[in-house]
Every structure is written in structure tokens, then in C-alpha cells.
Length: 237
Length: 104
Image (cartoon, rainbow over all chains, first blue to last red; front, side):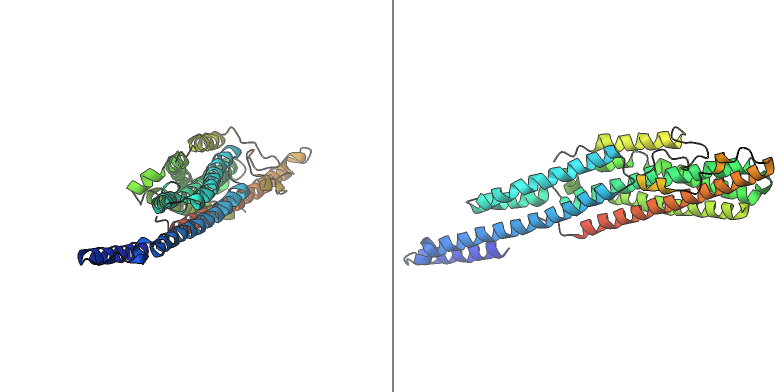
């Protein structure tokens, strides 16, 4: 915005001089305007370098998080890392291109692509994190709770059958319902999150709200499922 | 930008469904029923003794089996809780990223 204002003022001044028959000012035609343009170009390049650096740093953090996430399957890990590595590599390549730009429009377009092409903060990293969260649930929490439920059912139909009271049955029923609810809610969720594109995000900035809410609700249900198990276990002890 | 992430996610879902449906389950063996468990989960030591008591009297065996099953269940809950904590970490990280200015 500041750059536009400065150019507008300069242009108005030149036009005013011309309209009243004055000679074109030296600064408008010569070294001063060149200097102004050079400054603007330098500013675009500096901002672009900063924006890229910020995103590369965030991508590095996300890559580390994916690598350290023990709940991700190796295939999902590979997919997510491909995305992050790709963004990182493309942004790294974009940096020198922008620094080599010789015109303001060219630099401005390239600088805008840092955001518009990758949407690192608005989409890419949230996509990776929300997908990872889905895998945390599917490959971690659901598997463990399902296993615990099966073990409890085995005990209640066997050695602990005398403790299979209506209250315990109600807890087991709630447990099964919550596991099923989360299973249904998260089925295919990761794929749908990962399929989103920056273009789709630009058309709908709330694109990730629904999957995020699904994960929050699933987290609540998983917590309640754990409570059910702990209560039944307490009754069996 | 192309984001070729669908295959991996689908694989994860299928993987989880297979596990939930019983393909990955074991009985009361050393690791509580999760062959796909993350490496750190194999540190469990609380469910490994159930099958070793085959020569004990029936009542003791039942009690021991119940005890090991309870231990395995508690281990499962603990692991589920850990996975849930990771969910929160991922949700918070997603929110933090979205809070950044991503306007051109």
C-alpha cells in the first residue's frame, strides 16, 4: 500500500508539472525515480525472503513433528512428508528466483505466489496436522480402546460374569457406541482433508472447520470411552 | 498445487479398519492385542505372564488371567490416552498455523 501511494503521488506531481507547462522534473525522469523503483523492488524482495524463511521454518517444524509421530503409519508418514518436502523444496527454489527478478510486477507476482500457491499456514500445515490427528485416533486411540473393549467383554462373559450387572452393561453399551461413533466420523476423514487444494481454500476460507470439529468431538467421545472402561475395570477389581 | 496425499490416508483408514475388525488382534499375549502398535508401545511388561502359568491350579489360573487382562486393559487405556494427547498437540499446531497471517 505504501508503495502505491508513493507512486501515485509521484505520478500526480509529474502530471501537474506537465499540465502547467513546466519542464519535467529531473527526479521524475532520471535517477530519483529509478531509485524509487529500485527501492520498491528491494522491499518486495526483502519481504519475500522473510515470508519464505518463515514458511521454511514452519515446514521444518512440521516435518519433525510428522517424523516423531508414533501413531502415523509408515505410508501416511511418507505421504505427508512428500507434501511438506515438496513445499519446502519449491519455496527454497522460489527464493533465488525472486531475488533475481528485475521488475516490480515480476517480483510482486512471484512474491504473491509464496502465499497463494502453497498456503503453508492456512492450509498445508493444518492439513498435515489434522490428518495426523485423524491417524492418531484411528491407528492409536481407536485400536487400543477396541482392544480394551474386547478384553472387557471376554472377562464379563467369562471369569467375571457375576459382575456383569445392568450398570456395567450400560457402560459397555456406551463404550461400544462411542467407539462406533468415532470410527464412523473419522472414516475417510484423513483422505478428504488431504485432498483439499489451495484453490479450494481460496474459495472457502472455512474449509477446515468441519473436519476440525469432527476431530474435537471425536476426542471428547474417546475420553468418555476411556472413562467407561476405567469405571468397569474398577468394578472388576 | 498438487497434494498427492489421498493414497496414504486411505491406506491408514483401511489399516485401522483391518485392525479393528480383528486382523491385528492377538489373545492375551505380551503386547495387548495390537500388532501395529508404535514401537514405544512394545515396552509393555504387564501382560506377558498370562500364558506361562499353564501348570497352576484352575482357580489361580483364572485369577492370574483376570489380573493380566486387567493389566492389559489398563495399558490399552494408557496408550489410548497418549494417542489422544497427540491428537490435541496436532489440533493445537493446526490452529497455531492458521493463526499466522497467510495473506498475499
